Amino acid sequence: MTELLERDGRRVRVADVIPDDGPPPGSPWPDDAEIGRRFAAGDEQALAWAYERFAGQVHGMAVRAFGPGPDAEDVTQQVFVSAWTGRAGFRPHQAPLPAWLVGICRHKIADTWARRDRQRRATEAALAEAQAATGPAAPTVDSTVADRVLLLGELEQIGQPQRGIIELAFFEDLTHAQIADRTGLPLGTVKSHIRRTLERLRMRLEVDGAALHA
Amino acid sequence: MPHCTPEQLALAALREPLPDTDAAHLAGCDRCRAEVASLQRGVDALAVPELAAPQGSVAPPPAVWAAIAGATGVSVVPRPELVAGGTAPARPAPLPAPAPPPPGPRSPSGGSVVRPNFSRLLLATAAALVVGIGVGAAAVALGTADGDEGLQVAAAALAPLDDRGATGEATVVERDDGSRVLELQLDAADVPDGYYEVWLLDEAVSRLVPVGVVQGGDEASLALPTGIDIGEYPVVDVSVEPLDGDPSHSGDSVARGVLES
Image 1: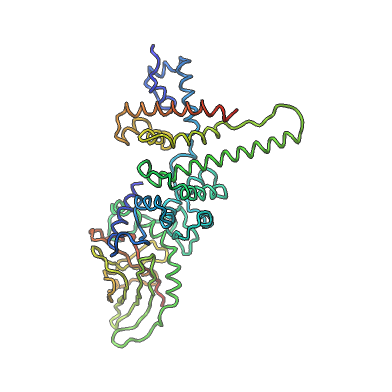
Image 2: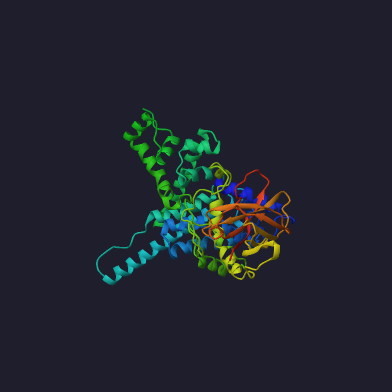
């Protein structure tokens, strides 16, 4: 990330010396914040810039989850389409554009798992019917798959700094001490935010998870 | 022994080790363990490697953008050579495998801290070489005797690498005394607090030799290092360099072409 910022800082400088009023429409190196601002404003060029700069990371995540191929490509495509059509929901002060895209990518990965699980159940149900035989064998929902979709949605609702803290714990595998270091927040604050966020997620599972799994 | 605090149980749910006394209590206390288990369901759902922060870039195939453009109706197009990835889409030119450390010819290894992306940018812009090669092939007639000026032995048309639109022509002229100069005519906007620098690169875009400083809109005659093999370094590269005292390539190239002899 430091590299990225470093490069961006430099690019901005270079772009700035091109004689023009502000970054020209085709300015090759706007910084992430500028891309985010224009993205939110509906500037199509910003979508292309965001793709140039972040599609590799997004697709890297998709490939890590599904291997190279159609599933990963669908995820990457959906991330950018959803981001663009849902740009009204982009809150730069909550998360900068690349982090927002990564968040959407998590949703799309979880959705793909859920879709695969539905397909699995449909297949199993069809199979059971064909065998027309014994029993209760109603295919079971993979509850973890369903939990993920639910909880990623809940994470979106959590404000900062609580959300950033739990994301560092979940997605960057940092200990509470490392999170305190990284964020500059007191240890006790980090611990109590972690506690409350885990309670909140548990509550969401108890309320909606049960209904979902019924 | 008192129960663990709620905060400690939350950390245990994240699988952080607890202080010994708490760990010992937890091992033997059903109530505390049940609490950890109930908090852990959320952890187990989300803290999985597939959802972790991105760790590596993979360039999506071109069809992905085509589908995005189709679904959104946007008419802009990302520059494929800039779509970051571990592998460049459609590699046109031989590329250095994992590029060696930034090849800045005069900068010590510490320079890579300041300009970490040079090799990556070289990789990324390698795709643009195709343009240069195409144009270079159509270069001016060569080998013409040019009076006292010397003999033109190679030439390249420089094509822009981005929408700054810098273009130019480079010719290598051998003088009677055997020395060679790169004559460059560069058509590019002025850089108020920086300058253009000319380089010769090898075709793998992994090694480079600085040739000299030029201004946009100028003709310049730059002496080539004695003994340099332009067959080995056939790519003429023009970069924008800031006035920062760093002698290595900025990674910000504006035009390139391939010398044809």
